[in-house]
Length: 103
Image 1: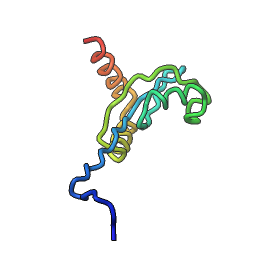
Image 2: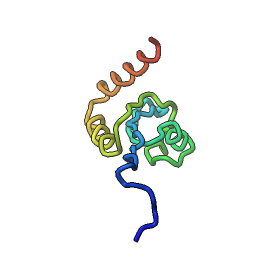
Image 3: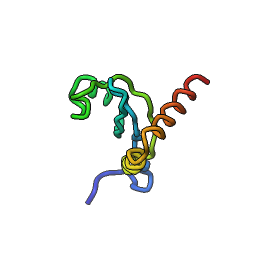
Image 4: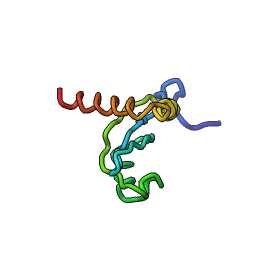
């Protein structure tokens, strides 16, 4: 028998924290796409050389695009879609994020 006075119906639903799809520009101009629940922290990891092997040949220079998603599974879906894009389309995403910052 439970001695807990808390009514399960009163419990607040768990709110999942947002996840993000992000693009990082490497020193050679290439773009790396990834997901994280904290893209700024993840970018710092990439810069320190501990984030992804991708950056061993060309260091991470700038976090150039982030897109908030509802949850991790949505972020994974968006990442797959972005990774399929041509570089020119990825550059359009970067340009749209830069334009949003200047307005």
